[in-house]
Structure formats: structure tokens, C-alpha cells
Image (cartoon, rainbow, N blue to C red):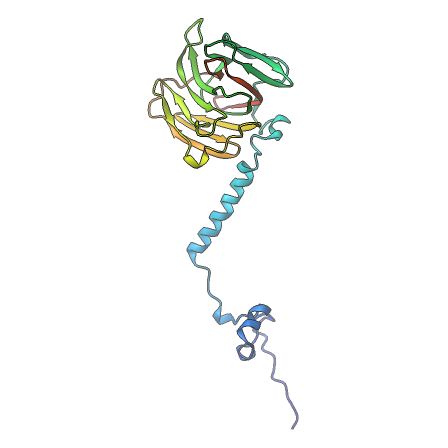
Length: 264
């Protein structure tokens, strides 16, 4: 008897062959070959699509913030991006003024602050700011407390803060680096407990501070530490100030200080 092959069904692709042929193969081999009957393919559920998109977005955010693109060495080589300007030129303290008796000098391309008295000391910008993004790097070289003040004003001729909020810096684990303190109210916002170890006690740290209206968002080494909206801040404008805590123990370095003035 002469064998006559069955006519080829052109309606199926090479991948989705006739179910009669597929059915004769073990399921394990069908899966390995990637051959799945067209009728057995199931649509991707809507929630699975949403979860995949969410994972994609989180991955992109990690590469933007977690990899330090906003506040790493790339910042020192030309700023975080368009419309950012240097607050510290790496050579001298132009644009800054000392408040108090502590020592502030430029050494090795960084601002070096050292506590030499039992009082508080600050290095403040000559210009006041309202809404802005501030990017900088800091390194703690002693156990003394430090911080970055925003919307700050001082009692004339003294180092007494009249108004302002501090973004905390402290090399000691558990001392809430990246938290917000001030406005004569004490602590306003703490990082979550699992974020207390984000600070690098003996190395350079990257900090990004975003102040927009009453909202304050702080990133440390690519991690969001706090997102706090103040219900009634005492001030919405003032200088930016680097702080050395009282007690004469502070030794801090700051560099790659850039600002994006949103009020311009």
C-alpha cells in the first residue's frame, strides 16, 4: 500500500503543531521542547502583569538611587544633573560664613570642621533658600554629633539657632542619622529601625535632602530614610548650615556639596 502523507495544516506555526502529534509526546518532553498546544496556553492574569510592572519599577529605582547615581563620585565630577550648582568649590569657604567658635577650614578638597570649644558651631551659607534639593558627602572622624540645618536663622552675634530643622548625622549606630530634629519640638521624624545601619561609620556617606514646601525627604547612601511633611514649620526660608555639636568632640568632613534651587 502506498503511503500518502497527510496534507500540512498551514494554520499552525512550527511551534504550535497539530494536537494529535503533541499528544503522543510525554509532557516532560513537550515542555523541554517548548511545544505547548495552542488551546492550552493561558492568558497572563491582570494582577501578575501589575506585579511584573512593579518589580520593573523597583529595579529602575534601585539603579537610580541605590547605585548612588545621585550622590556618589559622579556628583563630584560635574553635579547630579542640570540646574545644580556648587555650594562648595573645593578650594576655599567662598559663599559660607562661620557661626560660633569652632574650627572650619578646607583640607584635601573637603570642608573640615573640628570642635575646639564646649559650644555649638556652624558653617552657614551666605544665601537663604526655600525649596531646594541638596546633595553632599560627609565623613565622621570622631564620635561627636553633627548635622545639616535647613531654613535656619541665628540669634545675631551668637551660635544660638532661633529657627530651623536639622538633618541628623551621627556615626553611632542607632542615633538616627537621616532623621529630622528641631523647630523647638525635639525629634520630628526617625528612620525605621532597619535603616539605622545604613550609615557608614568610618567612610564617606552620600546624602540627598529634598525640601519642597512642608515636605522633607532624606536619602542616605541611596536609601530613603524619612519622608516627612511638617504640619506647621516655624520657618520656610533660611540658610543651610553644617553643624558641630557642643562638647568639642566633633570632627567632620564635607565635600561635593551641590544644590538645585527650586525657587529660581
